[in-house]
Image (cartoon, rainbow, N blue to C red):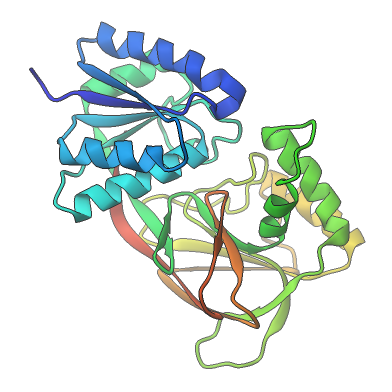
Length: 298
């Protein structure tokens, strides 16, 4: 029997939409003659465990049905499995989350089950980059400051979910967030007041913001977008421009593309990687990229 497709499903993603999509994916993959092993997540961390299994058993591909969170955790498992001597297994994405930010930067029909299944059986692949904040990997974007504050505010349940919840919470945080102090120069001790720093591998984040409109997943670099702190009334139009990807020309925004960044903060910062909150161990933080570290179905 040929190597299986490991089908990883987060049934809770997209408020239950992933479970429905998974059934269609299973039908589509088996219809084109592929052997499919279905694995559902039941607890935090299951995505990485299933992805490691796919690597160590040399699966034909890991097909993930879910959102950005499930994809990010699966990527961690694939990288870990490969580091432990497993195979490099291609990742196939069937988008079923709410934001699906990484999917927006991939030139594959991740929202069309049958067409994506055809790509899986064809087997064409692309090597894309993976970013790291210290030793924490991310595949779409990592951020400091404002977006962390938004995610912390979203820990309090509300009526809205997904992109609508993020945008609504972000609008509220525009008035209350006080910014942070940091620098991004290895030999400087002068810190400036910032609203947010985003290190983007993909073009979009937060479901609605084209934060790095020119970012490429396979260029061996990260796009750093820094927005300096400014008055709440000035923040609103700037973030409206960010939804269109038109904010980089603002005098309040700095853009830099590189392979490595060294950041210093007044206190060890909380940061986010692909929407997951993390705590840094020290005031100095390294952000880097590993070129071509992940194989995806293209």
